[in-house]
Length: 253
Ligand code: PXP
Image 1 (cartoon, rainbow, N blue to C red):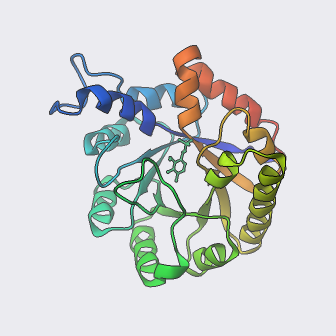
Image 2 (image 1 turned 180 degrees about the vertical axis):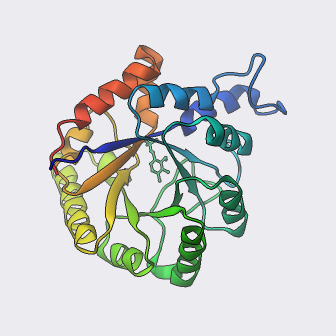
Image 3 (image 1 turned 135 degrees about the vertical axis):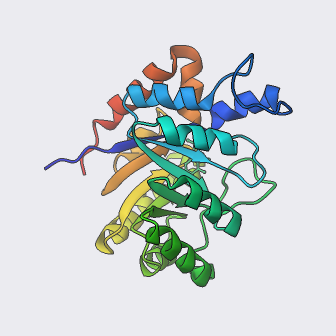
């Protein structure tokens, strides 16, 4: 049976636009405040998104706590809460109880997530976080570089899912550099599948480079934000999501 490749729409950058103007307001919605990332998520869901991803960063530069709470109540698909592996964030996840948590590294100065989580280098911390969240019925995904050591460590940490970091693939420009990155993704996706992990991918995926990415086997879900929000400026959120889903229909596992 051919299984559909799922689309998780990342709404962070709709919150980035709001924060660019309304960062100092005490409210996050209502009055003149726009755009509302929760309304953006609802449009994405109505247009075929399979999940909504949102990253509550330590510095709250885009998504705010209230956005997560409001989305929790009105979402119709799955919530994938992207967060750092810290006590503060685990406490917040316990309050929200999203369907899935995506653990990412977080540096205060980075503009967006820049590298995968070093699972192998902080096994004890990752294992205890995975256990704690899974104990609450939350599925845990680990955002990792497409690297053999990290994928083995993720399986050892008993995560059920990984998200392969496609940033280096997205930033590769020459044909040979793109090919090298695709080869890395193919071999880690194969290994992840052999180890019993569900394999997702995300970061920097757009309407063009996705065609090369569709050569990677065993992909379960893609998390895509920036390119969809950017396309929405021209065609609207609904159409931007539908166009991406249409391309993803070409995927064969
Ligand atoms: N996956 C992770 C772990 C991310 O941090 C992000 C956002 O930077 C994405 C996926 C989506 O990336 P983009 O906005 O480039 O599509």
